[in-house]
Image 1 (tube, rainbow, N blue to C red):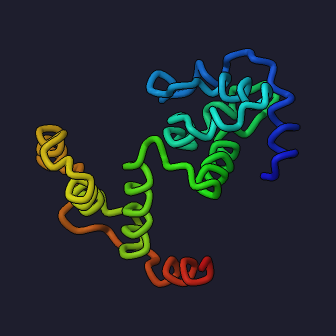
Image 2: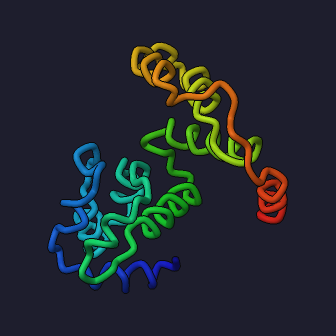
Length: 165
């Protein structure tokens, strides 16, 4: 999304707060989705690119479905992250980039995410080895974490990743 496309999309924002009310991560964001829109409208690009909000958006599309103007906030957040990286602004939430890369590597390797591998590698590389350990044990006992991944369409997926490079 080009800068003028971002501005024209955000220019439609009514500040109705429906995006923020539906966002499952809004309470952890330094600026709520509607506030990001307003900050962009005010022209404070630097403030937006240094926020944690752009790194916390998970792209669930709840905001888009609730927005009467159908502003695509997840797409906007992707573009803002790209702008921040291009301008060499470090991610305010650095482990999110690590998690993203590990997630994609797991999908490349197995054809889908292998949760146990993802969690294990993330804990090792982030240095958070014992955080959430009891939760992980309970998930494993209940069969929510599999020792081996269920593989599907691995060759097709590898071809897609090759073509994306």
